[in-house]
Amino acid sequence: MTGPLSGLRVVEAGGIGPGPFAAMMLADMGADVLRIEPPRLTRETDVSRLDYDALMRGRRSVAVDIKDPEGLECLLRLVDSADVLLEGFRPGVAERLGFGPDVCLARRPSLVYGRITGWGQDGPLAQAAGHDINYIALAGVLAHLGRPGQPPVPPLNLVGDFGGGGMLMAFGIVCALQHARTSGVGQVVDAAMVDGAALLSTMFHGEVAQGRWSDELGRNNIDGGAPHYDVYETSDGKHIAVGAFEPRFFAELAAKVGLDVPPGANHLDRRNWPEIRRQLTEIFRGRTRDEWCGVLEGTDACFSPVLTMGETTEHAHIRARGTFVDVDGVTLPAPAPRFSATPAAVPSAPPRPGQHTLSALEQWGIPAETVADLAERGVVAQAATS
Image 1 (tube, rainbow, N blue to C red):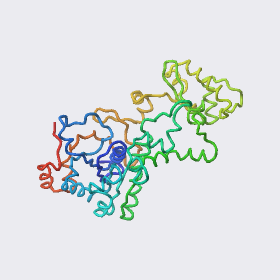
Image 2: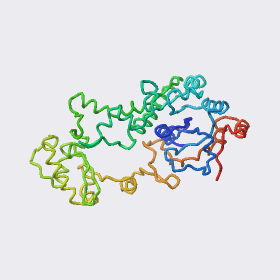
Image 3: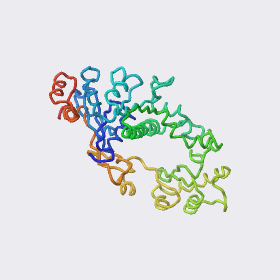
Image 4: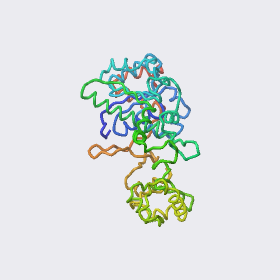
């Protein structure tokens, strides 16, 4: 393993979405991550995953029945030599299963115990079901995404699950690890997606406090209301994005596209927005997206083509940066950020459930005869080899 987290041991107790994303980030940076999954998944007719679950890349999969007392003990023995345990159950579930924070920290006082949920470990909604869209709605984020006169638009599940959830969890784990390594004292990290989504909106709360932000959609400089910070359609039905907020960047944009604005006109003055938008809409519809790339890309007009996931991998800048890598024949985003002294390796492909059960348990210190006995009785399971 290479990367700045090489040597770190992480036990990932199942979960979907933000938990696996956090574990993926740790694995991308070199951590040895063991994902615990139920043995039944190894008994599927097709032992491979039904789809290519990219969030599972970079770690090993161990099938353990943690509802069986001996399976639970197996999990706890892994915790004995782990630096991190990461779980994404509803509050109280890990305690009922027998591996809550009190149990694990008693065995491993330096352990960082990461808990990721939507609503957090406490509060009136702690036990309620939800998804990304619910968390960012309550956090005051979703209301500001969309167009005037239309319902708010969900930003995929990037803000709650991944930015405000998984990435927040990975950051919290690394912070707690720093404390544990200097003090020897572990702790619980409570990462709630509603908290993380709210945190991402910090700048805008500052704008509100200064009276510089409107709750009305399309009235602000960077919510699609300003013509100098928006998306426009081109003659071929594709789109380009401009973000010429600062005066000198707007001047460059105006000069490059032939925008007819009075000398000294302030593009930040909302009274000028309708006319600027009218002109830009007409101008950008006059050429194809690629033609506009030839005019504006690489200039200080703050321009970019709006690319799909299929298109971005072929862009010259993206290719030059190596922003995507090949993982077992599938093109995926490369590990990020980048480190000069401890670069991350290309991740391994997502494992089959239970693919590494026998070898990983032994490598993590459980005697081979114990592993063999547990496998014989179905407490742990090894995936088929073909």
